[in-house]
Length: 101
Picture 1 (cartoon, rainbow, N blue to C red):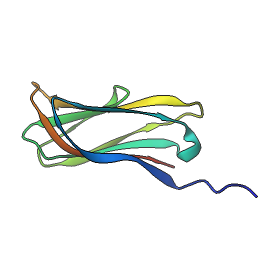
Picture 2: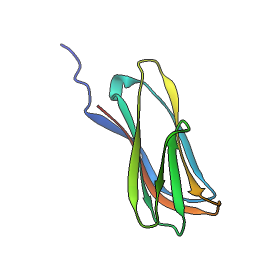
Picture 3: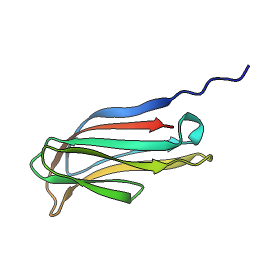
Picture 4: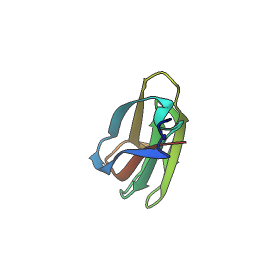
C-alpha cells in the first residue's frame, strides 16, 4: 500500500524582534513542492522578506504578506530572512513558514 503524502507541513512560526530575522530549513519536495514565508509586520518600519535572497517583497507597517519558492527533489537549505528597509532599524514581526503542494 502506498504511503499517503501530507497536504502540507508547518515548519516554524512565532514572533521575532531585533535588527533582522533569519532561519534556515533543509527541505525536499516529498512534503510539498513550495515553501511559503508569511509575515505580519507589527513594527514601526517596513520589512523586506526573501527566501534564499530571492523573491524580495516589502511588507509595510501593519500589513501582512508572503512569498514562496519552489522546492526541488534533492535536499537543499532554504533561508527565510526579514530585514528592516530602507534604512535599517529594528523589526517586530509574527511569521509562519510552511511547506505545501
